[in-house]
Amino acid sequence: MNPQSHFSWAESLSPKLLKSPWWIGHIPFAFELVGRLGPRSIVELGTYSGSSFAAFCQAVRASGGNGHCYGVDLWAGDIHMGSFDEALYQEISSYVTSEYPGIATLIRKDFNEAASSFADGSIDLLHIDGTHTFEAVANDFHTWFPKLSDRSVVLFHDTNVTVENVGEPAKKFGVKRFFDSVTPNYPHIEFKHCYGLGVLFVGKELPAAVRELIDLSKAPDFDPYFAAKGAAVSKQFADMGVELPKHGAYGDEPVTPTPLWRRAVNRIRALIQ
Ligand SMILES: C[S@@+](CC[C@H](N)C(=O)[O-])C[C@H]1O[C@@H](n2cnc3c(N)ncnc32)[C@H](O)[C@@H]1O
View 1 (cartoon, rainbow, N blue to C red):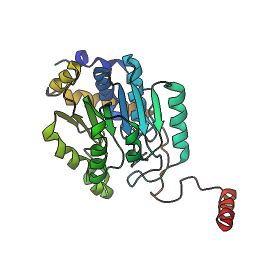
View 2: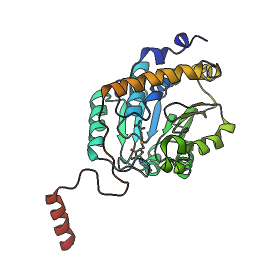
View 3: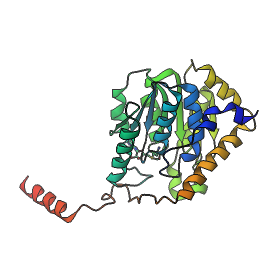
View 4: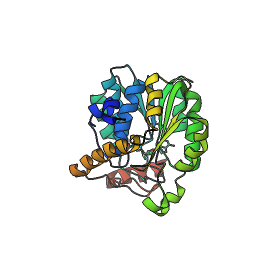
């Protein structure tokens, strides 16, 4: 296989928004998948600062279809990420409003609550990248499963997070265990680079171009091709020298302390209630 001649979406697009290092190594594959799938509806569970979400939006626009991307997040942090500043939501919200009107919608809700806004059988691409415990991933998959269409694909980030590569808290990561529990039922691909991405082909009526992608994934140079393309994106981001947002402990005060005047007003309100 000559990868360059097969993966025209991964070859022709380069990422427009890189905000954090943890997912961006999968952007070339995301471009290729979206280009081939032509999804009518993409839902991302866990958008954070928007690197993966912006890549989906970019590919939807490039593919010229009328697909729509929904980014669901409470932007309140979680047990793995910790807490982060409100500015992070404000930034990605203004970015998608100005860059992708008509393509992108952010939904600031808990994943379970947001599910009822989607019709059964309506989602072609679901990206699960929220809380990474086994229980949370299982809940996300089962809650959203009825929403998947007959041509759907589900992505799971962090299938390759182990105690060895991120330390003690990784013991709580259960993405790999959950992914392994569903792979016997569906065609799938698993990338090891950039913390791992599991790709589950759930729909029974996948477009021919996606079925071709599954076949191509069996070639020995498939994985190294996407790992190398991903590494190039990661290097591009490292060279930008972006300062990452600081995270606090989950459940603590927000990273930016409440101003003194606001705390005083809150105290007075509490007294008079
Ligand atoms: C790993 S980050 C997502 C990273 C993102 N995909 C990217 O490319 O940078 C996980 C996000 O999921 C959100 N999250 C976790 N559990 C959630 C839940 N049950 N409902 C809503 N948001 C949740 C967190 O607020 C956090 O922003």
